Every structure is written in structure tokens, then in C-alpha cells.
Length: 158
Image (cartoon, rainbow, N blue to C red):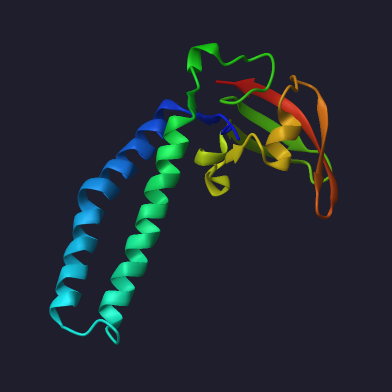
């Protein structure tokens, strides 16, 4: 099964590359040292330090594999190619929530960079996917668990 493309900004790509480098060069060594110290205590059958270090090692390796897959399938978003006419991945979109008369600003990013608390929403999220392809002035319907939210696209920038 083919992996799907993961859209990343230059900032997001750098952040993930730095995290992967840190996990491989620093965290792996730290956990290996903890395992070595736990083994020095002797019997590992009842050694909670050893069990905890091995669990952390498994989580670390899982995260490394995930990051490597993301980076292998990364498609860099070229900021110069982001349209200001149509919402696309990389767009900064100001929208008006019609029901509550509130404006919000979102940056549409790939799922690996999504950070809703900082206004970065995934192109695969309900809001992100509804906005994709929209133009300034369009009203889009977003299906959410509570029903439908209507947003009016106020502006699209890079």
C-alpha cells in the first residue's frame, strides 16, 4: 500500500528533522544508558527501572519510525506557489463564523504540522478540507459533530 503524501512547510520540515536527529543521537543514547544501569542491578525479572526503560525505548523507536515515514513522504509547500485566489495547503485564511459573528484565522497545513491551538489546521480536518478550494467571499459548510458551521472566507494570504 502506497504511503500518502505529507505536506510540510519549510519550518515544519526543519522541526521534524531536528526532532528525528535529537531522538537518534541523544535520546537513544540516554535510554541505552538507563537500560545498562538497570541491568547492573542484576535480576531483570522484577526490575521496574529496566521495564520502564525498555518501554520508553519501544516508544522512542516507534516515534523514530513514524518521523522517518513522514519525512520520506514529505512534500514541501513552496510558499511562492501558494495561491491567494483559492484556499490551498499553505494558505492563511481569515474566516467569519456566520452564526457567532466571530472572525478567526487559520493556516492550512499538512496533518503532521497541525496545531489547532496555534491556528494551524490540517488539510484533512473537517474545517481544513471544507475550506480547500474556496475563494474570498465564498460561504462554506463544515460538518462537525454538533451539526453544520457556516464560514465566510474573508481573505486568503500566504
